[in-house]
Every structure is written in structure tokens, then in C-alpha cells.
Length: 319
Image 1: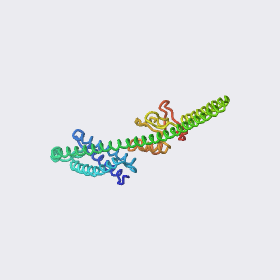
Image 2 (image 1 turned 120 degrees about the vertical axis):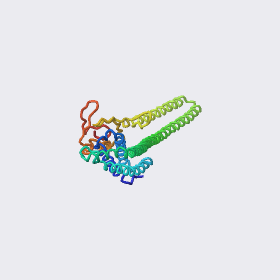
Image 3 (image 1 turned 90 degrees about the vertical axis):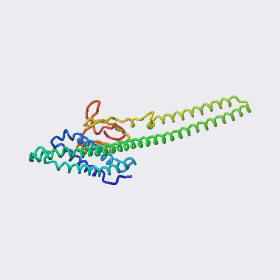
């Protein structure tokens, strides 16, 4: 079920509002001591909102129930956040003339406003921090549930593919065994007939002919079975929890800001897919524009040398 509301735009607008309040508190005289906790809560909220924006933008076309619930809750939280932050920002602006370092109000008026700020707004600030922390925690819990469900779905899909492949292999092996059993039955039937004829005619050469025919048939069956085993060994190993093919072994990608992540080649079929993953990982981070314009290069972690884009690593995908 797709996410139909403009979630990313809503998140970005609320984040700008949060950033504006943080800037206002930082500019206030003494705010770094009195409002450090409030600024930290707002920073956590801003980070959670950006993470939700990235996951919605990545999975918006095929949302899971958990992601849909995250979006609905986030939609309500955005409205609540906007109201809270805007109200507190307006409350802060009333005292801007006495809290900023550049303002020069009258001494009595300045002292009165500062006293009013410390007494009247203390409880409001405490309530504001509690509400912001509650919203951040609820969004973090829903975000974690959405990530866990997405991982579980991917594991279940991989297990289903593995079970289907195993079923096909078992059916093929059973068919081969049935054919071998039929051949053995035919050989036994032929031997019985030959023995009866030999007993009737009392001819030793006919007995010997039956033994040679039996040996020839056994060799033919052995050759067929060896051929089947050779073909099986040439096939690409199927993914399982016990053994993995080369394509299932991920390589570790370390980006320019030190983050490491495994990259599975079975999901990377083109450079466009690889570029899309890099753009998502750098969403909202330093270097995002360089990734979009492909202003980067790849290096081998063992030799620290640049890798050529024409080198092939698997299949027909150029490195």
C-alpha cells in the first residue's frame, strides 16, 4: 500500500522549524546553560525526522503495515511538533529583545523581562521538553519496528526461494532414482529370462552372454549417474543457511565518512542500482551532491589503488 500523503515535504518543513528554534535558543544569552537539554531533545527529534524521511522515500511504493503505521503516527506527530515548536518559538521571540547580546534595552525593563523569563517560562520549558522527548521516543520505536519487519520479510522471502529450490532438486533426484530402479528391475527380469533359456538349452556361452550383458548395463547406468553428478557440480550453488555461492558473499563498502556496510551482489545488477544505494545512504549528509553528480571513485581496500570502471567482478556487470 503506497504512502500517499506528502510525508517527505512535511518532515522537511518541521525540521526547518525545529532548526529555527535551536538557532533562537543558541543566540539567547545564557541559553547554553539553561536550555542545553531542550536543544539536545530538539536535535534528537530532528535526526529521527530525517531518518523517517529517508525510509519513506526509499520504501514509499511498497509500504509494510509497520511502515504505514509509522507514516500515520508520524503524520500526527508532525502536526503536533509544528504546533509545539511554533508556539515555543513565538514565546521565545517575546523575550528576544532582552535575551540577545546585541539588544540594549532599559536596565529596569531588561531586568523585569529576564526575571519573567526565568520564573514564568520555567514550567513551560519543562513541559515542552517532556512532550518533545515523548514524540521522539514513539517515532524511534515505530522506526525500529519498521526496520525489523522489513528485515524479517526479506529473510522469509529468501527462505521461500530456498525451500522452492530444494523441492525442485528433491523432485529431480527422485526421478533419477526411480529411473535407476526401473533399469535394475529390467536387468533382473532379463537375467531371469536368460537363465531360464540357458537352463533349457544347457548352453554355457548363453550364460556368459547374460553376464556380459548385465555388466554392460551396469556400466551404462554408472556412466549416466556420473554424468548427472558432474552436471550438478557445474551448477551455481543455491543460497542456503549452510553453504553460499560466490554471489551471496557480500563485499564491505566503506564510504568517505567512515561508514561500513555489506553490499550483496545479488541485489546489485547495474551501476544505476549501485548509484541509487549511494544516494540513499548520503541523503541529508555531507557529500550528497557529489554522489548525485558521480564525483567519486572506488578503491581496493587491500591495495588502496583506484579500481577501473571497466573491470568485471561478476557476470556482465562492469566494476
